[in-house]
Image (tube, rainbow, N blue to C red; front, side):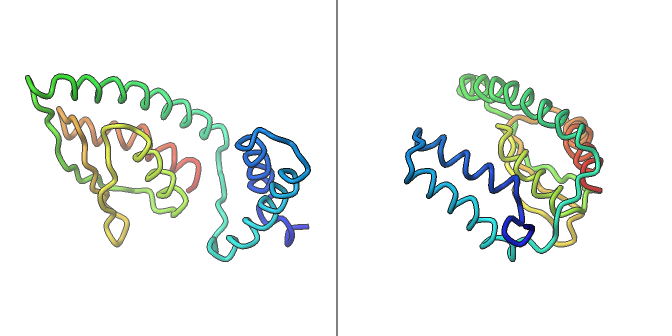
Length: 162
């Protein structure tokens, strides 16, 4: 069964997403969704040599809620900064953040979180994965931002993946 469905949750999710996007449960869509749900994980399995081992599933829920709150507040702060840009230009800067997170799945999740939160852009990761370079739209205190980033995102991801 594992050979046919290497990622059963992904298969079910792809099938459901296909039906949701097409807003139809016609036989053709059911067949195409099933084919997508079976074939995509099979074809992508060689691209993912390591399997993620989630250590604390409850931490995932807390992290998702925290990212959701940060997305909303960051949207408002960036909008305010853009609307006031002619009177007071934003104080954007590049910030070097030292990382203790080394797990590739955790780093991938961190990159997605950084991409989703407005006002931050993942710019570069050191080859040894020890330092992350972020561009921040509005930066008041670099040390406080680094501490917030590490406490809010890196530490929960370390709990989940390491």
